[in-house]
Image 1 (cartoon, helix red, strand yellow):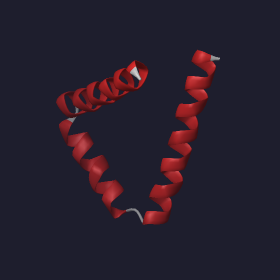
Image 2: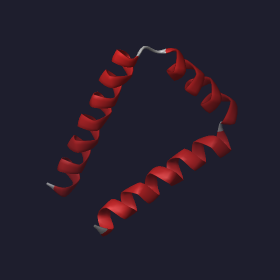
Image 3: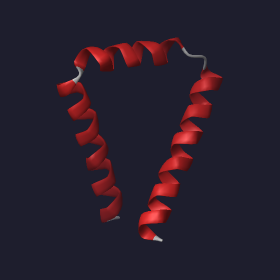
Image 4: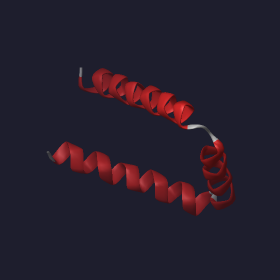
Length: 61
């Protein structure tokens, strides 16, 4: 359970760093995501989830 909490904390750190370092680019990326259809967002979400699982699998093996 502590690994899950650490992972969520790291997500917040990454999002915070992106907003602090590149606010205009983050806003533009969110606007671009807003314009994408739901099907495309689902595919991107599944690909991101699979990529995350692969990374965890490689690290935790």
